[in-house]
Image (cartoon, rainbow, N blue to C red; front, top):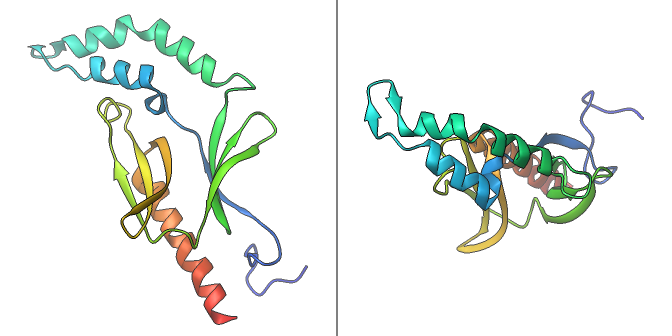
Length: 161
């Protein structure tokens, strides 16, 4: 298949992955609780309660991380040239998605406990209406920027047709 720009596929031809990210432990309530505990700054100098909690919670964090990798639990967020989707399982089954033309802004909502990871929720909005949410995205500003750039390219390609 010949392409005017190598590696760039129009959305009409096929769906192509642009970026895939995995949610952090901050996507779950137990992970956010762990993040809140590890963020406690009370203490003296270098030593504080947050660091003590982080040390004590290592087995819990490993168990929670291992749980998120189970074949029936694992999730990933995939940005394509057509949509943003939440995929589940080892076979990457699309669980839910939003098309790139179904939102006009993306907000970052950092819930208590997510700042420790660093992570945040991406809130896709169409005007004032929330159309889609991705929980616990690691370094959400990068994924937000990439989603907005993909959306701009998608709308530009549709407009030129």
